[in-house]
Length: 404
Image (cartoon, rainbow, N blue to C red; front, side):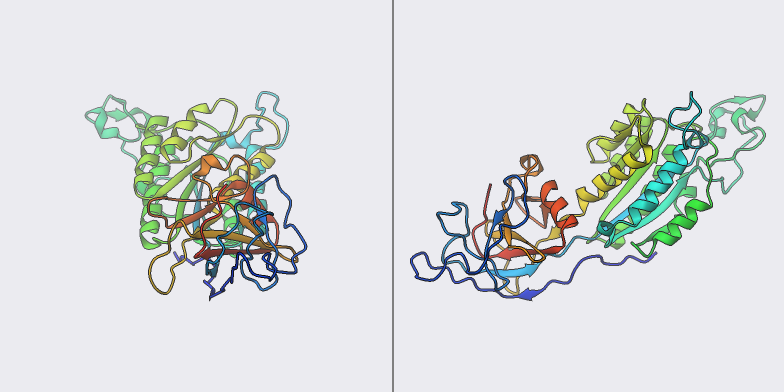
């Protein structure tokens, strides 16, 4: 499969901000009239017309850039993202969320429409996406004859009258991880890959059980390989299901969680979306996969909530920027600033915070690793702004970081 870099090219334009604490010039950079985009206390409004980073008057903002500093500005370079959606198409997906009532659209129709809608959103441009389904038919006929129950693994753990009980009459879904290693659609950039994914969805219909462990294992093997071939990209799996694992031996939530944990250790995160009101056990898979907890859709608008979950996943990885590399030396992590300039609006500096937990609903940014930073990650409020408002993100080196 082809992996395409999804980020913007660094613009290495050196911008020197002449900052005089006692000079007679306008210390605000001159001419700026707007205050940037609204928000509750996140970005710091900045003036200026030259495209550089203006220095606020100390009376305007006590957390401004250091007077007298010289800065180099680089266009923000997004860390590219490779997202693989592993979608459950077991028989229960043909039912509505309220299966007892038997009314309303099926989970399958609502979820697949949400996927199509997601791929058409402007904010997904620059993300690469691939797709797989489970269950899939077995590539090799499952064992039927046996002497001991182990001969029947992983399809059955019952050997009776020298027959594997669960394999009599044939099996429609594979319990072998290798069968899930081949993607239905290989990872490629959106929006171009959307048509292939929509075609793959159109060719599927709900059937079978939920062999979640082998499905995630085969997918994870694929994504670990992909991550190794694309080390500068964020690799993640989105596991979407409407039930607990069924249909194979060694196929319970703990088994699936162990696969997710192994993937995380190899650089692949696992997000989980559950469609149903009794799926809290799926949280363990998300936790072991490095994403805290599952998105559970227990009632209401399945399609709308599924789309919201995909957007939340996109937001959690879609605002990671590369740490710029100056032409000489290494950047000082304490002298980095992030600026956002909305089209036609005034520039603002996002303040640096210690970690994701310190965002607290306000604008800002933090490092992936404060001791050895490789990525600059925007807080959700800042991420929402840059994804919804047309504008430009700059990473500025050389001035003491504005902190919250």
